Length: 384
Image (cartoon, rainbow, N blue to C red; front, side, top):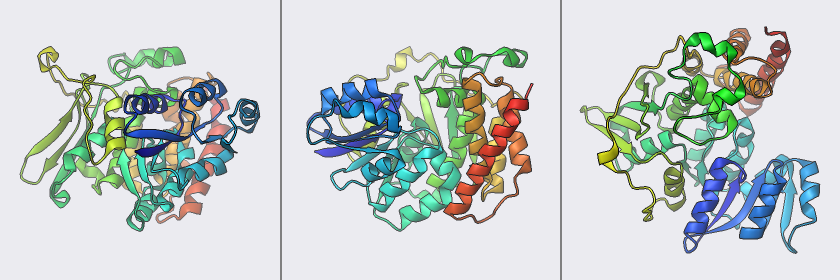
């Protein structure tokens, strides 16, 4: 029985993880959950799963939940609460389903505590990949990627000669705007963008999918996870979302991981690793797959993908700055404080102003992240 902590249990990844814990009662138990401020979702989880520990990041939300806690349940708050649960000795697997750079802190705490980590967050690896990979090397922690693309690559490389890896192909559905004309982008509202054709995801990641920044973040993440030069990572638009990514070896052999479009599959693999559990709900019917198509990403329409490649080539503090600028821009768009077309404008302007630190430590990365956010906040109100 593996004891699981879910950081971000009220989001789509968190809820799917809960569904799997419910489905495999003999395999997994829920030890701890965390939310930012979603009290109603947390109350439902407490009633059904009765975890021993919880963390509520928002202090006001924490006050509301205290009255309904079962006797003996431990409750924490703030980033300290996330770190405590990520490193708790009663937890075997830490599922990090928090979006954004905020996940960096509990990820480092889980690595320090030598946990098995199911990582469903891109931003932490993007901003501090060198630090995370170094700490993983110097610990007994095991990181299993949950994103469908990274999970696909991870599975394709299991048991293979990784030093014979030549190229990574990251597939992308194209997002909700791939076939939309560029001239319509200036009129888009959040409700227009939050309609992904293939995946059910949170708001931030859905906007990132629409700009192709999500794929750009995955390029940088893949570079660190699989020790691959960014020049050898290619993005392919694959609208059917059946092939979740591919790897090519030096002899020309290409391996692909295929499956139905549902995040339950990579989450289940990360939880059960290195075993595989039977799941008859997600069988791919090849006779219903009419075609598998691939297209080139249009970086004129979606320049954020180019920004990510540039940040990866520049290295150092550049990815952290790009990521922070993107987070602030996406938040402003979702809050309807600026238009969709302004997202790449914010990122490009902040990146061009930044003086790159080539070998930043953690403090320098956090400082660069903070600088980029303040610059973005000053810029956004003046956009027209």
